[in-house]
Length: 483
Image (cartoon, rainbow, N blue to C red; front, top):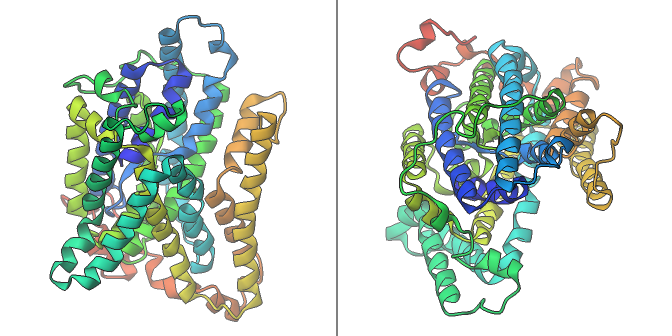
């Protein structure tokens, strides 16, 4: 969790005008709310061992709020930070309504019923593979730390379990916990040994273990509380842009939930349970807005990959982990020590975790007829467009400083640019549309797209194992039945 929890505030808080103390408090708050949201999702949402945490999808509309004209003339950096944070809070509170309504009303259940293995492949695959920019490019920012972590993790997770048979289960499950301290200590020795004393500031920022300013800025004990930055402010345009990000996060989380159900050895997730999970994720975004994390929530893709690496798909483990997240967020100095791990170490983990998450999508190809030209077209076209369209939007933005959609209405620009900058959203949308419109009613097509494999899981009651995996605790199913 710490990778995303640290990287997003580290990128956003200085742009808002915040100092190291503000950054430490935002990281604490994000980790605290992530722990609460994970517990809510595990007990009342999908009940899958999914972790809910910060999401890169919400970064684009947050940057748009930072650059808004109404904050430009504020001379005091700290006052500017507080005003922008309150504006972000207001936008998140409004945006949360989208997922709450779509999830709890059952609208998303009706959408998910038409999802077939064929249309799930591009969506789930690009939920993982689409994050390639956060992998090796980030490892290479400090290659002498990132690359050893990547190589060691592959050795510990893939080679040692088959070499040292007595310790197979230990290496399988604890490869991450073994390799991070080794490389972290190596990075610390490089730092204190003076390896980066005359290095450029950017290299020092990525490589040194004492550069983040988090340990000094973090309080010993602090409990995050709602409205800690002041009363939220609301702007219609900013709320619409954040709603677009909320919708993209909804689609991406659908793919991540499917990957988690696959790696947790659960049955395919029934549409009604998926819809319930989306509703609770909306409540998670509402909590983000109330507490002021500066970022929205979605399913943690890296933890979906971690399920595959460790082969631990236990709900109880995730609940205990959520307790640790809350514990470390309240004891600020302890959390800050872990948060000071150099980012390239996390990027090395991403290379494996995101690859595993994407592979879950490729696994659904076993249900499709790959000799069918219809299957080949939908699969190839949706994945290609899922990579190509966001590449165009990102390239255009990096050159021009604004997205391809550049009208006088800033909120409309942000909405379109957010939607089409997500690889998983574009690929999932194209695949879902084509799969449900091209010769859908032909009997041979039904088998080609693998739709018949998921027939018994389209309703909660048609498979007896649904009760084991997805039923609510405390006999709540009597009051909130799944259909």
